[in-house]
Image 1 (cartoon, rainbow, N blue to C red):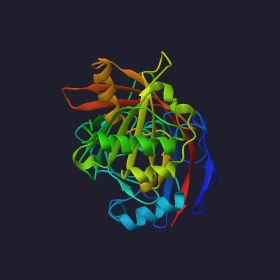
Image 2 (cartoon, one colour; image 1 turned 90 degrees about the horizontal axis):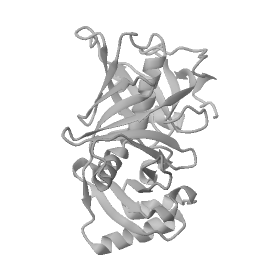
Image 3 (cartoon, rainbow, N blue to C red; image 1 turned 90 degrees about the vertical axis):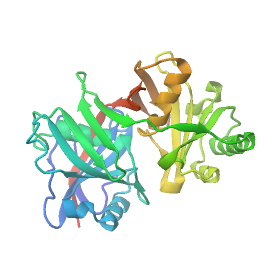
Image 4 (cartoon, rainbow, N blue to C red; image 1 turned 180 degrees about the horizontal axis):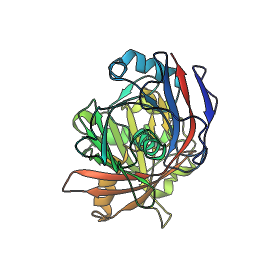
Length: 323
């Protein structure tokens, strides 16, 4: 990975980090930065996310945050500010305000960057108190996320379900299928096509046949702009007996040609597959089958209208951004 021109940085592994970032801004002219691969323990797999710690005023400056995201040129940047005194009432909890940016656009929700942020916070001495067992994230969209570390070392998030509704006409389904076929480089058999509701109506969700081999496709991501949706989630049943479903996600309209592993897509994927396969609240193994790929555990909590999303993560870079 090339070191961004705006940062001085050194590579890091789980056992050796030459630079330990601090939660507060390092100085008036620099900010701490870490890059963490989510949904993997491999340096070269999973989905990278930049984590930048800012002060309260900087978190409100969308222009600054967008410019930093452009300079860092990662799939997603999470900007974190620790809410003061949140451990006073409960020493095993801590709260952060968070905003997420791609190189061109602010996002309302990002699962992989939250997994990455939580892994960094739990694993780096001095970022949060060692007694902390759960991390709460307050988002600009009014969604509250909670992360905890499981007994086997995975990071588990609780995320809201994103509800689906079918596309309104057969013609709409046909048109979407044709675009997806061209974008994936092969004819596909659409088994379901829908979209998110409410504030997530910009998300297209399509199940294709397992024999269409999502992993083997050589996609042309820019063709997904023709669907008219910002987010395009394509899924299929898995032929691997240890994996329930596979998926890929494309979002060229918001600066992400293909998202290597998309956590928030599982806010739609998890209830869809749990209901379709009668899994109820059972934990399911899933894979995102992009070139980098990633491994996910997820479960539907129907009564609470939430899912749990679990993944591992690997820190690959720490340093500072010079402003």
